Image (cartoon, rainbow, N blue to C red; front, side, top):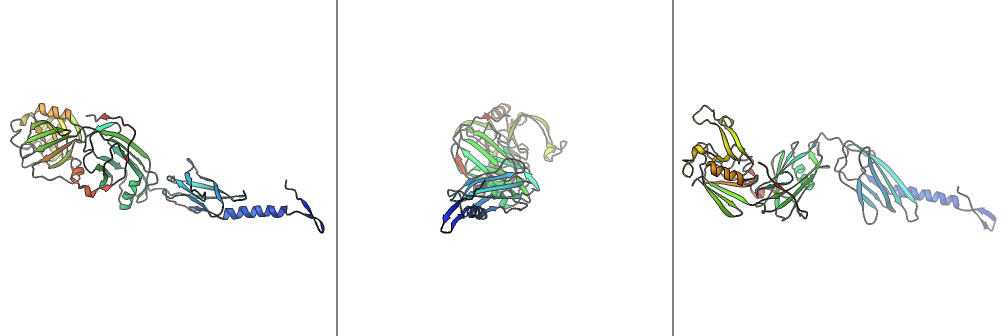
Amino acid sequence: MFMAVTTLSACGLTPSAAPAAKASAADTSARLTAAVTISPVSGTAGVALDAPVTVTTNSGRLTAVQVTPTTGAPLTGSLNAAATQWTSVGALGATSTYQVKAVVRGPSGVTGTLTSSFATLTPTAFVGVSLWPGTGLTVGVGQPIVLRFSQPIITASSRQALLAYLHLSLSSPVPVGAYWFSPTELHLRPQNYWPSGEQVAFSDSLGGWDAGSGDWGQGSDSVTFSVGDARISTANLATDQMTVTDNGQTVATYPMSGGRDQYPTMNGIHLVLDRESQLHMISSSVGIPVNSPDGYDEIVYWDIHISDSGEYVHAAPWSVGAQGNTNVSHGCINLSTADGQHFFNFSRAGDIVNVVGGPRPPVAGDHGVMDWSTPWTSFTPIGVSQLTPAVTTTTVPS
């Protein structure tokens, strides 16, 4: 209960100024409240998910800020040193109404409180991503990090903005760049091959990413993997010899037979995409009728896949007589059964098979050759940080 206090004056007893003081406190509170501005403005609808929430005062100091959605956790934020501005951290949730409450305190201890609300937009679609390599794998020195998106990313601004939502850490930092090979596929690769023994940690957090066309990013992912020994092989179509190196040391030289004149093996730095111990190869899958003179329908062993167009390094006992002297295949690299099995056991995803000496250039968009036939100058450099934690890995399974 507020009680008036009287004081003695020349005219006798008079009421104190307590009621005026009460009014003054209310006025001060009102002025403090009026000094606060909140963005987005109260009542705003369709707020973008990457919009920051800011609370600013030009009088007093902010003592509390709460930004709470209808569902989900409240936003976190940071206060500047003067306690005059609070800024949210992180993305807003889609299709949500946020309530904002800010408390500001003046020098006299009087406080003012301002509340507001706003609503966020509803995306046309959410965009997620899948990653390769997977966690725990050991890959070859040429292996890119591959991001495949659930929706096409068309605009240059959305592609550029995405880079801020990606994080790459390396045990031995080297320059890494990003290149879009299609609207749904982004690759990251080093300027040169990965250092052998490199530990890689990659993560994304797509919430708040404007993916364009009304689409917005959603979800987060992370992978950790290792880079194994530098296993680089050169298949020379002019000499019909395949030289295999491990960390710069030649470990094998195989007689081989490449693609005949009608079906030349593609030149260029190929990646080992995957491998299978046996594979049913049928010529109709590459447009050659099985019953034609060039047709085939075979179970083939020790298959190392090196291009989208169906090129493999594999065992070919039927062409041993041509291996080392004549190119007779339909585009694959033929080896003897023993050499094919040895190379199969030696290889893993991301190893390099460099095909030289032939007439056929690399094909744009072929996953076997596109990463290392695309000039480094076409890649957009991305930020790389130092990785400190150890990464536990396993070899890529066949």
